[in-house]
Amino acid sequence: MPYPVLVAALGAIVATAFAMFGLHSWSAVKVAPLVGAGLGCALAIASLRRHGLALGTTLEEYRGAAKVQSLADSFRLHGKAAFGIATIVSVAELPFALIGQAAVLPICLAGWVVIIGYTIYRAWQIGDVSLFGKFDIFQAVGAVSFSMIFVAILYGFFQAGMPARAISFFELIRIVLVGNAFATMQAMIIAIFGLNIVYRVLDLTNPQRS
Image (cartoon, rainbow, N blue to C red; front, side):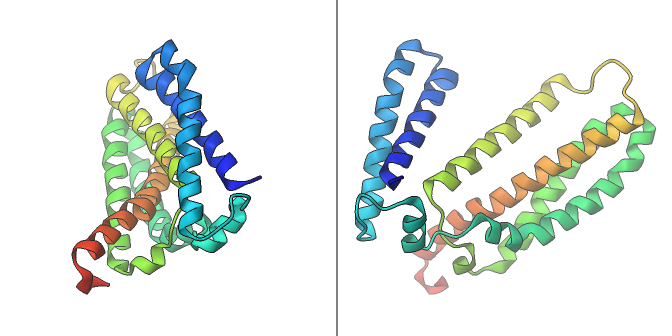
């Protein structure tokens, strides 16, 4: 399927979701698909023109011409540091499940900070923007969507806290491990996309870095 059609469809979906969940407006929902599709199509055509590609170019052909990096390669670049620190944090947190559920929430939040902070620190040490590659709109939207889910989970933790009912030791362990898994994915997303943007901005403002 041509790249502009795919990006137009993605734009329609994103615009509709924003109108529904962000604006909460039925009138906006009616026009959002057309606006999103139009903007997406225009963005795709501009990207194709920039790389000298035809309008019928497929997604795979565009990614090859634009040197879009596979997310699998990006995850491998940061996965060792992210999963390594997540394993250490998870092992360190498990004994707190024996103390009780009141201790698990603050320990989980502290663990997430450690996982994300350490992963970003290790990614920052790479210092070579060429290793971060380039990304397309589909990968960027996916990263933003996962980040929104993670923020929603974090917000839920702060708002609801632990349930008043007693939670078994094994349920607490599952909460810890699932939460750390989400934090690990979020840490890699920040390392891949966030630092990519930071490095490119620094290279633009300070050419001597390049």
